[in-house]
Image (cartoon, rainbow, N blue to C red):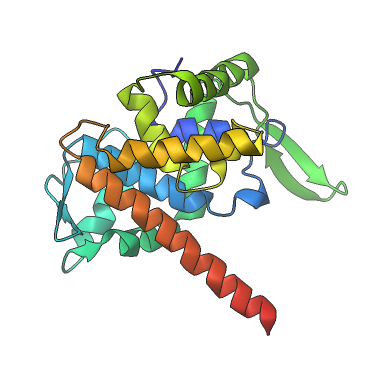
Length: 229
């Protein structure tokens, strides 16, 4: 089942994090765009933003109880004109370190992770955030795999998670088998394409997913060019 006390951002972080360090593994380098997309998803769900000509419009600037969403709202407020979703993904990404820290703090307060102060070589201090609720994470990932691969209908909350995960390689954290993962990606693509989310903000969600994909393609291309020189 989906933990009711966790936001989309927190669920994605919990699914992706290393259980021992509480950090996001380097191989999920596109995670920051997924989290940025999740923040925009949540604002769309709260009807605080809308899309006009594929540009984000801030409809309600009132603060929420979520510091990450408030950070994004503040960025939107400061903008001199509406910008495309992909532009906002880049801008939110610049706050990536702060956002991940805020997510960890929230998971810590909700007792999903703990804090362990360490020292590298006995000199350099660092902090680990080991997972406490291992069963809850296993239950969540098992539930998501079962719903995506075997259910005829997909609940809206799960569909939102899948829409985000389908644009990235995070799906590999819950579906290890490559053939099954290919099947799952096809299902997610169909889910979004055929409007199965059945929500008034489906257009915004679809555009956010496409923007996440575009952001990652740009980053991958830039990295490949840099590596070739």
